[in-house]
Structure formats: structure tokens, C-alpha cells
Image (spheres, one colour):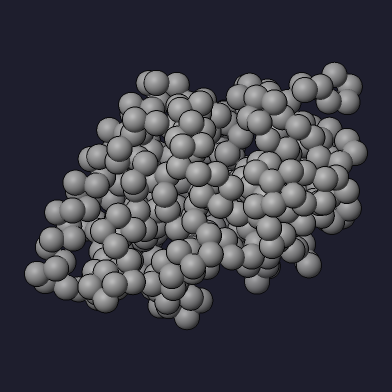
Length: 411
């Protein structure tokens, strides 16, 4: 596939990892949707096109609505998704990749603990945890914002909600990252083995934890899900798939947007100063971080019947790639879209998706970020980039720096 000005769309390249936005802009400049042969997918890059695809009533995430078991098995073999017994049961099937009654039933079992009211009850405990982390780092002149701070918060907090002991949370991050990496374009046998092995280890860990909760329930999500299973609202595989999804979703994407959000503040020092001067802008600043560098820039949909959409006609079973990362930089939707503006309002970004699959954990992610950035601005007089150009993760489905070295001076 060629793009205007001979700009090739190469989402596994280093150039794309460092800055995908010229590639996205080239896609937005093309008429209609663009077919990407390497992924057998039609890419929607403009805000209106992405919105139309994800909200269309004939679009689903699961192949079960468009193919029989034999066809699905063949698709899995073609994409190297086969021969992964635990990954297939607990990761390839999930609340995220289900539709209709199954999706609604599973989401209902966990939704109550992710409402704004329930999430806000965690503010004090999150603040205490962040303060403790920062206390241990404050006297250092230089830190890796990702590894030393950001990576410790989201998984720790989501682990507490689910009922995972604090000391086990670091291992959850390792499992999560090794499992999720297989969802990107590069699905080599080595990455496949890594994903399956880590899924198996994760499953056996959760089996033991579930057994403990069955004999001694606590006020946590795991105990709530055990009761839901007893009442027939989810089966064995759905229980573990949902637990894994919540833990995995609570790790990577929030860590990534924390990193890219900090990087944005460092690239736009006037906006950091603006936020220092008026921390009442923190909520809009956090939303802008999600818009400016969407941590989950790519998702897919299938159409369940022939559809006319985005000015073109597509046959049943067509796969669509919705580029949230591109849509959120569409200048027709966002004035000065490539500028980072902590006071941007309105800011109707779609980094959390739309419709039935709107991100369940969006309130928790935003609270984590609010607390972390408010704490740092209150406790440090200066925060500066301590490396020339941070390296970003490679891939189409993720967006965030691998590391972010910063120098700071406490007040």
C-alpha cells in the first residue's frame, strides 16, 4: 500500500514508533478508507469515519458472528493464533472481544466497582501509595519516570480492587505485558510461546487465589465474581478471562499514557507551567493526554452483513481497523490538533472508545493520572527531560515510551 508523497504505512518500523502522526495524516488525506494488505484490514483514520464504524449497529468485535467454527479455526491458523490452549480460552475470548448478550452479561458483573462514585472512594489510598513511592525517589536527581514510578501505580491499584496481595502486583505486570504483546502485528512463534506460557502461569496463580477467596471471602472484586459464578452469571472460563482482562487492562495502557502524558508536558513547557499556575485544569489536562497520544491507538471491527459505510460498500465479514490515535489528531474535529493544550475544551476524544465497548476503567485511569501529576507538580520545583529523544514502543496497537528519564528538583 502506498500513501501520498510515497510515505509507506509501516507500523512496525522505528520511524512509526517515534512518530506515527505523519502516517496518520497521510491516511486522513486519502479519500475513503484505505486497505492495508499486511493486516487484511480497511483502515479508518478520520474522526468521523472511526466514529461511524464503531457505532454502526452491524459492527462486532468477535468473528463468531461472521464465520463458522471451521472458518474461525482456519483464520486462527493463518494468523498463528492456533495451538494456544490457555491463551485461546482466557485471552482470545474476553469481555473486550465479545458482543451482544455475552458482553452485556459479563460487563454487568464488574461494572458496579468502576463507577465514578466507587472509584473516587479509592482517592485517599491511591494518594497514600503515590506519596510513598515519591518519598523514595524525591532525593534522586534523575529517575526513569516509567520504571521507577508510573509502572508501579496502575497495576497495584487494580490489583487491590480485584483482591491481589500487594506483593504479587509486580509479577502481574510481567504476565500482562508478555500476554498482550501477542496482539500486535508481529506474531512470531517465539512471541506465541511467550504469550501461552505466561497465560498458563497467570491462570494457575488465579486458580489458587480463587480457592482462598472461596473459603475466606473479602470485600473485593474477586469475591464478587465468585458469587456471580455461583449464581450462574458467568462460567469457569469467563471468570478467569474477566479477571485476567481487568488486570491486564489496568496495567499497560495507563502506564503508557502516563509516560506519553509526562513527555507531552516536557515537550510543551508552557503548558506545564500553565498547569502549575492553575491545577484546576488537571482534569482537562488528563483528557488532553489521552487525546494527544492515545495509548490504545488501534482496534478492529467486523461487519455482520453487507454495509455501506464511510462512502463505500463492503461485504459481510470485512475487517475494519479503527485508528483512535489518528482520529484524535483530526484537525476537522480538534482545532490545532497537533498542539498539546491542557485547557482544551470541549475535548470529545475517543481514546476510550465508544458505544458498548466504552472503556470500563476510564474513571480509574484518569484518577491515577490526576493524583500522580498533581503530586509531582506540588512537590517538585522543576521537572525536565534528561534524555534527548525517548524511544517509543513499536507496534500498531500500543503507544507509549519504553522509558522516560527525567531530572527534577524538589521544592
